Length: 251
Image (tube, rainbow, N blue to C red; front, side):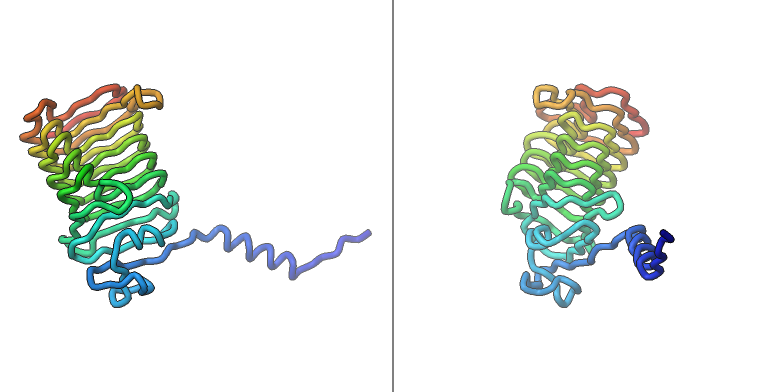
């Protein structure tokens, strides 16, 4: 039997394949102290009011712009992807998170979520960590200012391929400026300023007792400025359970 040629079917199949090959792009959302969570969040005029509401709404590929002002933090458990990360970014220089998120005692908590970027916010006076990432791979924290947080400025655990750059972490009351823990591999910690923290400026501790292989493999620590840390013990850079590290050009 001669096969039947169905041009319309083949054309539809070709169109579907083409559409699948096109990367998807997320929405741009806005948060402002003059906003309202009943708004759409689609412009500054229709901005949302709280960061937690934004964190509850976002999907892979979305970006959230944050206007200057004071905010409670947010807890994020929605993952991005390599092609479509989720980004929270300060619009100018004074988007301040000065109260913890409603779920944990951290300013920002990113948990069980990959490909997230936090950019440009100021996180101060938190009961635990300024910014915390746990079970979160391929995330970025850059251009943040983390001051006077009780435990650490930036804390991560089980976070492979994390990038921490151009952050200033200072005056951590109990521990470190930056602390990467729990078998996190291939961390890049560069161009940060860590000073006047009670313990270490930058610490990597693989914490074998907490699970994982107990090794932090192939971290890179370079271009950082670290000073006036360690009143309660600890150095500029502390390492435990680390293998294959590249550490250079720190001051």
